[in-house]
Amino acid sequence: MHKEIKKVLIANRSVPATRIMHTCRDREIATVAVYSSPDRLASHVAMADASVHIGGASASESYLNKERLIAAALANGADAIHPGWGFLAENSDFARMVIAAGLVWIGPPPQAIEAMGDKIAAKDIAATADVPMIPGITNVTRVEQIEQWVAEEGIAYPLMIKAAAGGGGKGMVKVSNGENLELALAQAASEAMKAFGDDKMLVEKCIDPAKHIEVQIVADEHGNVLHLFERECTLQRRNQKVIEEAPSPSLSEETRQQICATAVRLMRKIGYVSAGTVEFIYDPVVEKFYFLEVNTRLQVEHGVTELITGLDIVSLMLDIAEGKEIPFRQEGVHRSGWALEARINAEDPLTFNPSFGTISRLEVPHGPGVRIYQGAYEGADIPPYYDSLFMLLMTYGQRREDAIRIMDRALRRNLRIEGVKTLAPLLLSLIGHDTFKQGDFSTRFIERFIEQSVEQPVEMEEPWGEETPRHMDELTATFTETDGEDKLQQIAKYVAKISALGPQDWM
Image 1 (cartoon, helix red, strand yellow):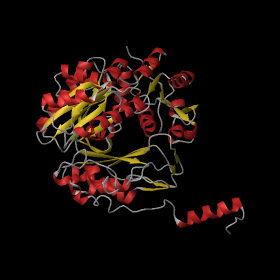
Image 2: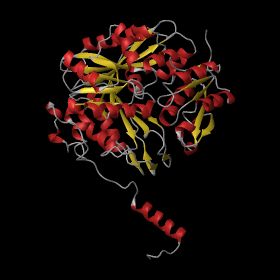
Image 3: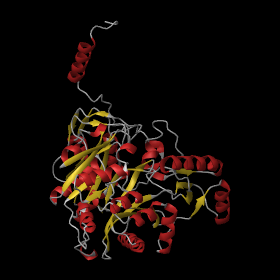
Image 4: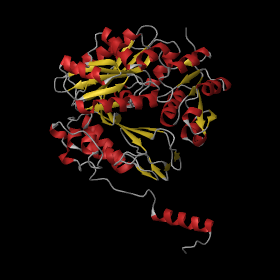
């Protein structure tokens, strides 16, 4: 049964909210923005057809307040709610509440969200679908369980301790030897409890070196489950992605077909509907991939898949939510060219510490092969209460080297941001590094170069070929420190301050 969606409330802010609004505008669907007190002048508020204040600065009072979000949708005549990514996007209780309120949930069924939200349950389901699994144990509460497993199975360190619930790198600790087991387990469990309210843990063999590969899936309620090929999300820092690309430069065509078919088989087993992503760890040494998790939402990096396939994934989500059948079959999905995505976060590129404040100057890249998802404007505030991402910069070319060249042009010559520090200098250094250009990098590439240069602790026991830290200054050598304001602006602010305060004792 089809239900036409005429107005969508977007239960999110900044980049995800504006991204969804673009597709809604294309389809002539009205949008409702929600905002917290600090976001009253934010980009997504200005872009929407209507907007509703839902609470104070704290996310728990605003973007995580299920009741207020649903009430805002009903009060403004919305037919549906799209959660974007982050906040409540993978909250099965919220999905159920939306449906119970008579609204359309633009996402997967609540039971799929719930099943995949627990890593242990997800691994059990993946095993029944004959998906390759990383050696590991679940329901870990004591160090003795880990020690027994290591001894009986002959497992070699390093190990990865993970929270069963949640994601985003929280509650995840790497252990290089048995001496650190007790401390690592306690640390991971504590982080998991704070982040997710659940300290259930699992332990896996750490694949090292490793690649992070994910497969984009779209599925409808008519039984059609399709893949839109894979993305490489290997460049990470503390398990947070920094640069993504599609397709992956690491996979042979045979492995690409295998990993995409495996993802489809798993999502069919789950009974998945809507857009979702199956994530894998790939061991380039033995050329094998292993199941990691399923993300039951729109991914931040979905744009690179859109660029190489020519599809609008958000539009497909809307079609599927309306009960429509996907209008093509697997043989109708083709990939062409290469796409990169760089995350522009308001963070110090050396320390990754947040850099919140007012964007005093913003020049956005344009030109052939450039796509921007923008969540802030010149003069806007980057508040300290939420995620620091405020722009996604994507480039497209027929070959990988073309996409890299265009990204270099966009970052080096066309992007200008002042008032806050961003990751742009690091991103520029990464794409210009020979190891990146050759595609011969791993999930630990950034840590190998950056963390030692700022004297942060990182485990360096095992050798790692080209990623050894002997060139750790290479990535930071081109960084330039700016104060984010030109001299005239500084003088004007100084004069205004003195005028307001009057004569001071030190004058």
